[in-house]
Amino acid sequence: MELSYTGVSGVAVIVAAVAFIVIAFIWYLPQVFGTRWSEASGRPLPQAGQVPPMTYVAATVVSLIGAYVLAVIVDGLGAATPVDGAIVGFLAWLGFIATTSYGSVLWEGRPTTYWGINAGSALVGGSSIPRRLCRGRSARRGGRVGLGSGKRRRRQ
Image 1 (cartoon, one colour):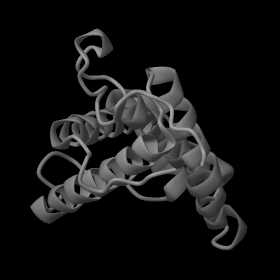
Image 2: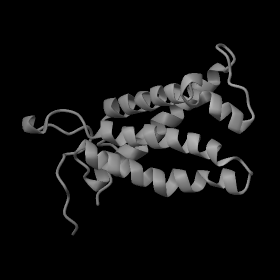
Image 3: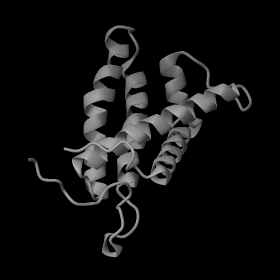
Image 4: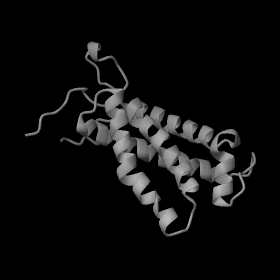
């Protein structure tokens, strides 16, 4: 496995991060899971204009970092198709997000609904990031597929 920290497509990372932000925004709308999240967390949903601008800046930076790290992993594993990307995203979610965030249920006494809504957002948004990273210029044109060569690497 080769990890390239500079061979990642910046455009693909930005598109994936924006997609994650949009998915999370929709996920927490009152009509989707926002009301249930509010009840489970014991916090009211913020109204328009109540969220400090730095919260949006931080969310954007966090999304960009997550997309970049997943891009490095996807490229290093040689994931070439959106299905490969979705599998990588699911495994990353299962191994790191679902397991560590469940601590809020175990140690903080949060309801499993709270965990499920937050973990679900990370699963849907996070799995979409590697799928988007595996898309890009057509392989028939010989271009990179999102961020990698699209060819599986052999273990040495």
